[in-house]
Length: 278
Image (cartoon, rainbow, N blue to C red; front, side, top):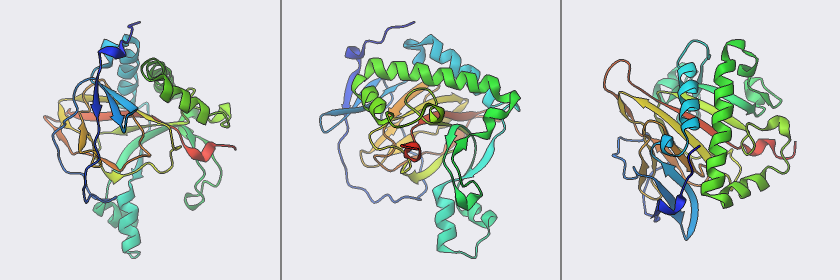
């Protein structure tokens, strides 16, 4: 196991800038300006960090990411088509649109969800539950690899930023074990080769951080852009970004495939407030 020396990591001070970016707007292609290992500081407080290549800090996490991504790209893991916020915005603006027409105006993605899913009566799911993928025998290798990657990511967070880990632990004091994925997350989503319009993760617990692990092959782009700070994070292959996704609007830049087998996938862990106190 590699030992992380956070004292050797530089700190980037994120400064608030003016912008006119709105939720639902498509994220354009932007060259990354955060592309080396660093702590992220806002108003004197470390809010997260970026690691360009996790293999320097944890060979175990790299192996788990490799296994999870291989399974995710295989037929063993069923992907579901999910709509981003811009699809719902298009539908609200024009109620006469069909779902298919709204999807043509917005962004739909192929994803796999693990862990806890909140109740959504409008979609015929009135009660919270575990993702149906957990009952799929073919997906068990993927689930085990993702669980392991979550725990190893938590270990790195605790070592690099113990105050963030402690805050997330505190937020989980009233969340039952059955709703946890790992120890300080409730859920996970893996996204297949998609960019995303600007949005903010309003369902997340305020004060928590997301972990974003990236696999990228024969492709460019797919970088996380945060307009509040004019920060664009390089989603390099085997990178790890820990960031409070509830805090700012953010989008994902377009993915440029170099050939037919090019892709950029993300394996994400997050904490939903829907599971507090239930």
